Image (cartoon, rainbow, N blue to C red):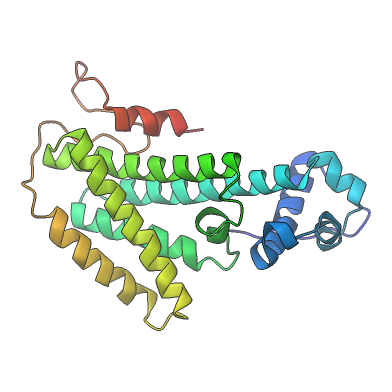
Length: 237
C-alpha cells in the first residue's frame, strides 16, 4: 500500500488527502500497538496534526479503526479479484489467488493484522465486517469453481472457503516463521496441495466463466446469477 507523504505541519490539505494522511498514521499505530493501547493523541502526533483536526475527520477511535478496517478489506478483496481475473488458466488462477493472500500478509504496512488478527473481534461491527470479508472472498472463488466444474453452489462455496482459509492461515504462519522459506516457495507448497484437490473434479463448461468481479456471462442471457455471484456483485463499490 503506498504511503502518503507527510506535508509540512500547518499546511491545509484537501479533505481527501488529509483523511488519507490520518489513516496512514493511524495504521502504523494500530498495527504496532493494537486498538486498546493506541491513543488518539499519539495518532495525531504521528500524523503531524492537532487532536481537534483528527476528531474533525474521525469523531472516535473506533470510527477511525473501522475506516482502516474497511480500507484493508477493500485492499484484500481487490487483490483477490484481480488475481482471479488475471488468467483463464485455472491452475494459474489458483496460484494467483493464493499469492494474493501471501502478498497481503507480506505487505510492510501490516494491514493484514487489522483483518485477521484484530483485538476487537468481540465488537459486533468489527466481527461482522471480517465475517463478510471472508464470505466475499470465498464467493469470488466459488463463482469460478462453479463455472469450471459444474459443482453445486453449496459445494463450491465449501471448497472456496477451505481454499481461502488455507491461504490466509498458511500465509500468516509463513510470516510468523520469519519467512524461513522464500515466499514463492511457500505459496507453491500451498498451491500444489490445493490444486491437487480441485483438479480432481471433472472440468465442465456449461457456460463460460463469468468475470469474478462483475459476474458477466458470455452468450447466456437466460441464466440467472448464483447467490455467490450476487454476493460478489453486491459488495463491489
